[in-house]
Image (cartoon, rainbow, N blue to C red; front, side, top):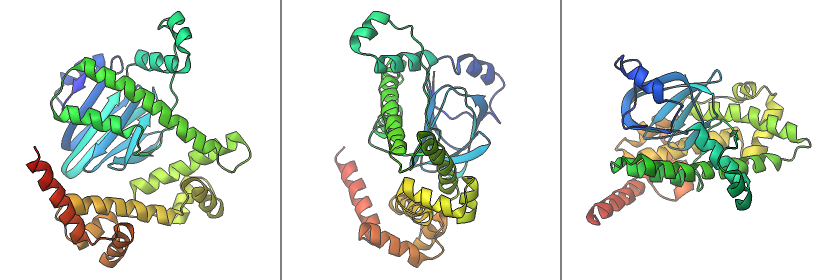
Length: 314
């Protein structure tokens, strides 16, 4: 199923729900589009992955809310009950890919078996995926496939067989990415494997909260409470996992968002600073200079030059 518009179940025609429910969760599904207002769910997902550009989409699951935006993607395991909401002053682009259960089983079984055994057993063995359900930074493994699929959606490609091939590639990349995350967890300087997994889970709850609320900001006590840890242990463990303090992580997130706004909008420096949570223009300017060695005007000039070159090269 390929939907080239974002469903808003709050205002969707009544006849759309039975049609959608008859296919959702039973076959591969890609939902893509741009909207200022959209609401989806709550409904149970198969294995799914979600990415967003030009804003944020809020996802509610497991009693918490996380914001997927330009810097992250989110994977949800089969059976997860989730609802999503877009509320923005400008159109936000959202891409959700939900995998047919049999496709997930086939890909994961074949990936774990030598070719000879895969040929002998056929395609009947079942296998379930188990991913870490936290915001994941865009990377060089999963994100290129997401962008590749997105580019073909923009071009108007409607061949569902082609998209199924890309979903197989995407599943394998998701598997590789998840294995890297687990390896990172297992390398933490903690004694017991179970302790490492639990520490990562708790710190990730706080990290998701920080990334979702970076504009208004948050304090150490709130983050430690989200992780069910004391401030002392949370600060130490956050730095162990991320390599920086929560404050440094927050400022890095704000700067990423600010650089994106400088490159894609004509907002003033004061407006950009306010939009990402910096209290003062001078704070934003200092961080921009430290990261890029450029002024905001130079960033915009370079972006404009690249855009002009891309247009002339068409």
